[in-house]
View 1: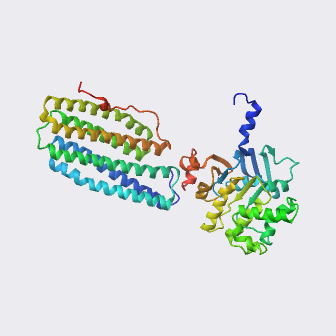
View 2 (view 1 turned 90 degrees about the vertical axis):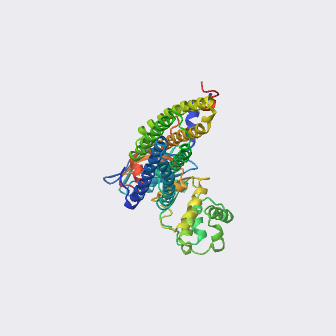
View 3 (view 1 turned 45 degrees about the vertical axis):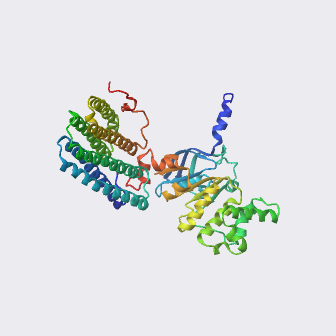
Length: 235
Length: 266
């Protein structure tokens, strides 16, 4: 893309991009740290995720303000307009993902008091890594204006959904086997659900990137994988 | 729809198009100012022509009421039709054509006459009024349509040049619509006006759309976005892109349009 005649306009847009990349980086880190704190039973690490969420929230406010200022002063059109609209949506999604990471960290502080449920920590960590990778690719796609990469992310949400389905059934089994597992499994299930929702939000972000690049929202169906709404037994 | 004849279908598709241009070329001496332009301009619609200085937008606008005839070195070829009628047909009287295709210019240019006479002038020379009462009615209607009646009704005999810039421009619009035109051409009608007068003229343009096909040349992209339903982007004598205004401003197809509207170095 060519430069604007007004170089200050370019600097404004670059400034907003820098903010969103910074926010994205912090959120990626929060996802990984939250999952690691559970696997390592590291309460301090979990605490740092909770504390770090404040910075993420502040960045969202800052991005909203910068975007509003740019709209008011520059009256962006076309790609510039789509870019600002995209940034606003990305910031809102990132903030939500940050909240989910914080929620995982909170539950970790509770879970460390209980005996671990076999294999679940590692499975959650795998799921979190997958979502973090999707998020990383979405941010790269945004930065490079790469609609193909964003489409690839969009298709990958299916895998996260399948991991969640498997975990859902697993937790159900553990709870039926021994009611003493219920408390831990309930927390773990919420964590899995949080990560699954992170995947959905990341998918929305990827769709927003496609809109930014092409000017059109993707409308073709993508594979939907969360089937737990229909589960009646762990089978 | 099934039993429509081919001719019926052509008629029905042509219905919405007020002005139809095909293969229009304009030369100023050796300078090829307009290059092979095809465009269909809708009735009851505001169409904006945008583009950098010297891109040919005003030149093309002036083809639509044959204003280029008044420039000796200008040569126009191709086909321009209004309601299917070739306006460059030798039988067409340019003066009559200009009554049908009104024009408003960049700088308000009222005649050095009274407000009343400014508006009455056109209808008088075209014999549109049978008597004084008719003429009075045309003047009032035109001034009302131009949103100037309330401000001007008590001073119809005072000189048009005594009005403020914005009022003068609305007087020129009243003068242009007094001959009951079908098309109204506006060449940067707000560039000499302050933001309030601009907003008033823009509001007026939106109302005029009910009765006319309005074509406006503007340097203000925001104005094009505000008042028009269709936008045509001209560049170096070419019509680069012509589409719905909201499409042009959210997702233009040509990179040259994108660069121009977003203020980029092309």
